[in-house]
Length: 639
Image (cartoon, rainbow, N blue to C red; front, side, top):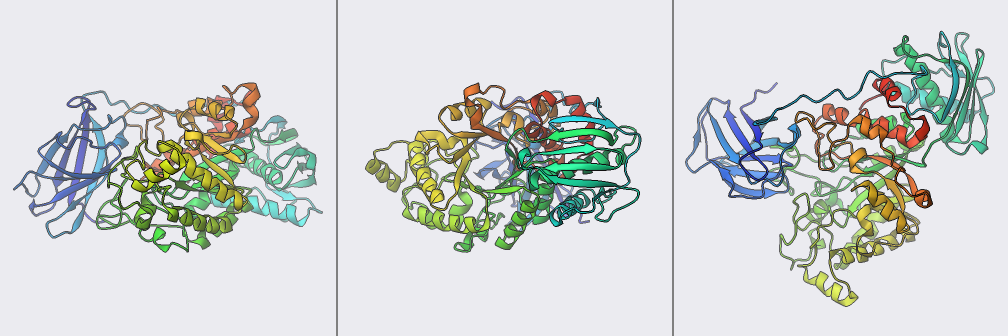
């Protein structure tokens, strides 16, 4: 293991500035003095007042990238430290992940040297440890099921079968379905005892299959007896869900025999509460290798979630290979000190990239399809487009002032310009390739967080607005998105977007699905306007939100904190007027990756809240039980 030559310590104090102040200490652990250097760190708590720092010179900032120099002539001796403070912050730090995520030094010869970064400390206030996330839990019925079924009337037995197998006479598709869930189990629990075999076994119990289309495509029933288990299913998805239920029922008592049992008699009648049971993954801020994406899809299938919303582009990177525009995945993915895009969100001295080739996309889509998970791709437009504009500078209006507006994340001029004809040619070609890759009827186009004031300094945009008789950023966004919707309709696809798609006049409601993320009331307003809605409010379903107010709890907190209990109890449908409930198509978890610098952070923040949302998506409100959920959740697979 390479020894650390430099380390950056940091603390946040609530006093000393409108939003408190940072104190940074750079420690020289090397054997040599250090002079004529610059220090870079990345942090979501940004500096907005360059003059409000002591014992350092603020040089520049780009979104989360910050660069400082020590005072002129300063020399940092071996074993010594340099301390400076910054009080011109854009918000206070609330959690240990609100400080520096990465750092490096740029030396006088241009070399970039890594700096180790410690956790942010809290000074001047009490730093309480985060509370326990799950109580011990309590079971009325000793069955290990996630999500809990719509109706269960089963009697627990004393023992459990050694193995389950398809009965003689099962069809080829039924045997294949058993094999699919068996393989899923093996991938998720590599040390686990397999629940199924494809050969009959005298120590096992036979599964007798029967198709029953009246159950609906995702419905199934299970009838248990000492001799066999009867699985009736509406279609392939229902059959898979019934087998997944059996796998969970058998895995529970094997792992915790004193707590969980297997049914000896009785029935389970099951079908999902909502048709859209989604999970979103942002792969732009942090890159997830194909194997990780496939494992997450496996976990979704285990929880009977049926939509994988793949957030493929953002300011930080464009991750989808588009053969018509190769620079999207060369220039548009590289972040580093000397790369087209500066380090962000945990990048340091070493350049980082990563994208999904079209062959990898096809493999992921096929993997998901075999598990009855639909992949809904997202390219985030017109805002959140820094990476695309770096890759294709011809998409910018050269007469527009370089920093005429900034996004909420601090990116300058980051929206595709609706007044440039090439913008539409670009999108037509991107959509052509996406349609060939993704069989889903939906394409998500983002539409969120376009900064008010975008394009107003663009002479081309001003001419377009004058010609069309429109004024303001959001009316121009509506003009743009209506054209995008026409492109998708021509390709037999439906437009999905975030709730801001409705701004400035919105787009036609027919064949449009919007995701309410800013707060729950937005979803009701969208439904009133005639849009179909998926509820994914940050206050309950954003899995990057911290799970407690404690400073030591990692995550974001712009939407408050979301304990697992709160996420589990949240009822997206609860406030919808009866006459609008038909507009609510389902619910979705969102995994935003700004804070997910490690597998440990990912698993801590995503689980058990992902399975809590899966239960909200599947289980009727009357059957939800927090203490039962808490007893079963520790059995969940993790990434």
